[in-house]
Length: 81
Picture 1: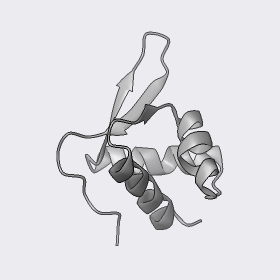
Picture 2: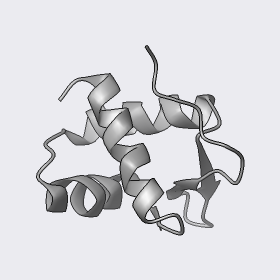
Picture 3: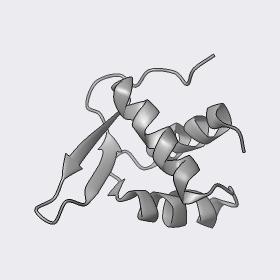
Picture 4: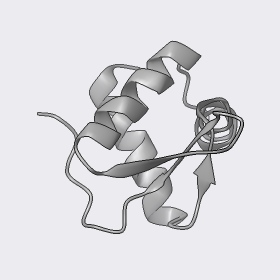
């Protein structure tokens, strides 16, 4: 799965599950694997960083340092062209 397809898959998941929030590991397992999408954890982390940089997702750090990702309240930007 290339970067654009991965970002689209994440945004599609959030369109169907707008209140979802999870760690990168959870995103890889529950948002992608359960839907038949294949991506390595580093690929998922890269896609999450790109979506956060474009304000499509927000990142929240827990006290233990774990990052949680969720849909940004603003309109999500499209995946890179």
